[in-house]
Length: 361
Ligand code: PMP
Image 1: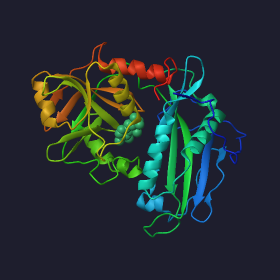
Image 2 (image 1 turned 120 degrees about the vertical axis):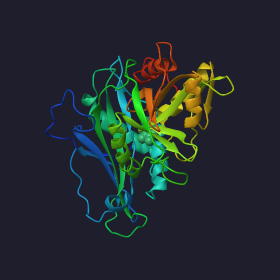
Image 3 (image 1 turned 90 degrees about the horizontal axis):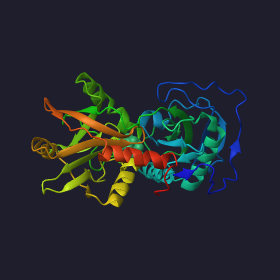
Image 4 (image 1 turned 30 degrees about the vertical axis):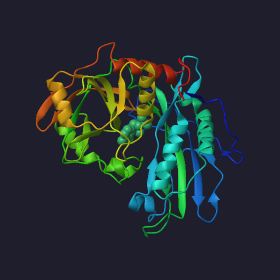
């Protein structure tokens, strides 16, 4: 983790205007509905480049009705959290990885490049201004939502000449205690989240908006999330907005922790990367980025070779999977016990995030 107090760069032109009317902080609210007192905005234009970053009271945006983020989805976002440790200090978890993923998304969206270190420093300052919003609890956190939109005020489908990068903050409750219930997934090959050559490996709003329809169908089947499949062989790709892991005895009889490779249709999750690095360091079983198909999973379930399955992501950190509805069949996935990889990873990652453990960066 990176200490919030540990500034790495000066942002000389940062302007800070504090709010004169601070909000009352709510206790328990739905995720993403109540925002802190301040926000960061930075404007860009092709003629003048980046303007001075501005921390200001949280407010609505004013956008031209033709602006191309609204019409053509020329936009992207990021999501990460700041945690308050037992020692009361605030820590970010591997935030440069979010900056670099954001830069990759910006390139793909034809939005301009930005200074990643400077943006992170501005975010640190924003968090510092609103630090009282970070819950005094190691099971809740403050969610950081950097957003980058085209503000090009014209209907031409073209590279934007104007853009706005802004960052808002909201409280996030706990999803990550080890007793979390296993979730159920609905897998139907008729829907596709991402495809080769597309934008599935970027955090663009369009990837999420177009997943809603399938998500509601999953609800109808009593499932919490969609298990996204790909291709004729029904490759397992992601679960909802999580990367997916299978801990099993593979076809060659080896114990393996496997997750699909970053081949363009998978979002390169920061939690995913951290899990791969941690478990490779444990050195207790094979850790692989490889293709996994539904028929391999069904076969392994029949032969009782599956130990556990879980999703990974900033929201829930590690989320055990208990059931998959696939082609009209209910597949029961064995659930973890206290010694499971799921429980161990939950503990190790939590310890790192709240500062009980040294860095993994
Ligand atoms: N896949 C998708 C599609 C996601 O939206 C997310 C959330 N960012 C993830 C995986 C997990 O990524 P991370 O571990 O960086 O939160």
